[in-house]
Length: 218
Image 1 (cartoon, rainbow, N blue to C red):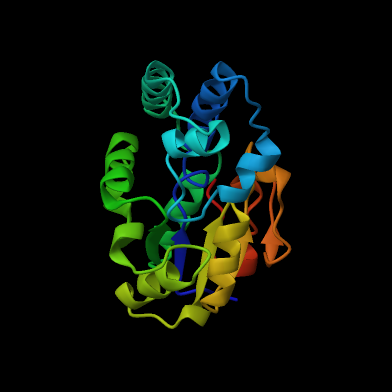
Image 2 (tube, rainbow, N blue to C red):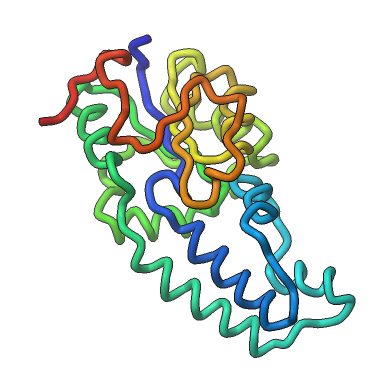
């Protein structure tokens, strides 16, 4: 397959912003005497409209959580997520796609401000032809709406696109949209590898460029 475009998920795929959020939530749970195993947290990765940390704790505790713990958690993951780098192999794949004059887009369950802010911080925003985010569709992942919107913005048939995802919810959404989906699990999503994926890679360093009609960067 020689795709006309590549659509990236953002969180956990371009940068591992998901781990600081989990760590902050885990620490806040621990503060209240509660465990938050990564095997439980992984089920919400990539999905839209998840409850806030405060609501999640309130549901488990049956009361309002300690507001100081919530503020500490927010401060922790805000600080940490601003330091996460681009994941291995991402820059090479972006460069190969642009060199081949293929389309390049993002379909993210996060809001536009979050995605744009990180892309600007990482110096990547100018590479993308379009951004599709949760606030632009009625339904988020695992519904296919984000990927259908991303293909429409590129004026492409979904079958001519490959998706780079990290999560089960993302893979389900991409396949429901009729796209080829490559999953690259991260430190969290490696605990729930999606059977829906067409291909699973340990890292984008292992991306099979020739199989998709792209030149491997040297």
